Image (cartoon, rainbow, N blue to C red):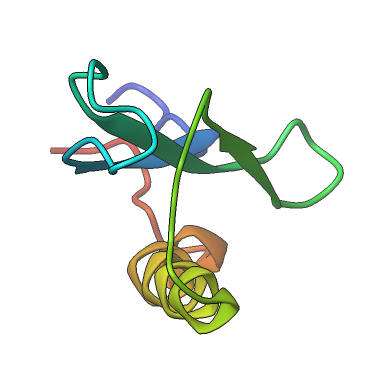
Length: 84
C-alpha cells in the first residue's frame, strides 16, 4: 500500500462583482478579489481591484466580514490525507 500524501491548501479566493457607478458610466462594472494565501508562514489576506466604489465604509467592512466567514475554513488542518 502506498504512503498517503499530505494535502495542503495554499490559496483560496472570492471574486465579487458590481455594476458601474455613476462616476464611471462607461465602465462595464467592477470586480474585487479577496484571497487568502499561505506560503508556509501562515495565511494572510490579499485584496485586488482596479476600482471598487461604495457609499460608506461599513459596506467595505461587511464585504470583508463576509469574505472572512467564507474563508475561515482555510485555517483548518483537516483538508485531507491524500487518500480517496
